[in-house]
Length: 317
Image (cartoon, rainbow, N blue to C red; front, side, top):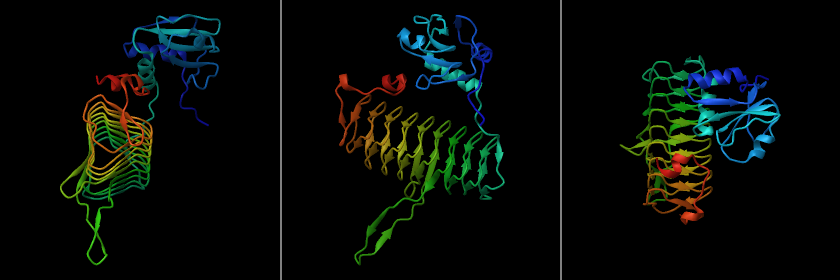
């Protein structure tokens, strides 16, 4: 099996230099062969560590760890790459430099694309993709078995994973006087801003009438999440796994919604809000920077506010 995480210490140090990151190798060169997680240790790994406990470094065998200068030291079995900035930030940037996992640009021969679709330059369209009368911006990536329906506008450098449906038809209906179900055709659209990321099995329902379901610039949506009609995600919202947002809700910029959480229709969530794991938001959250959790979701006291999201999301910076 091909391992995608292979590297060497020489490649690592060279990449750090090219990224312009100031660092110092403390200890000898070691035979690093792959990047690894501290939750799954193995010899010859490259790790990052953001804490200050020396025992973590002591537990690594013939490895190298990127860490803050204040804790960096050499042991019999581990060397350190001391950095002046957040080690996690350095590690993520480093991996982005070392590993290019994006597929080649081009349209797979099994894709079905409407003749009125507009496909920008350097776009990847995977196997068995279906694209209707939609616009796909430059350098975007559409994963296999995904459907992009009529009336969708995808920005530049957007990544949409496998088995997604963008522009799905939702279930909007009323009962008629004779007991017949009357369904409202959904003829609105979907707009996805530049640099957004939608992972596998994400569904985005099209807007009602003249409305657009909107995913703002730089949003990150994890697998399994669902957006109802006319939902608006402002810039850089992060949805964890299996989040459900009902129709016409609005989520403020830089908010983070934890795995399995849900938001009722027409709810308004202020910017920089954190919604806890499995929470059910049934009323507006009006104060920016609030953390809510529970069923139904209520504001958490400051001392109990949840962590687990990137620092910038917690501070609103």
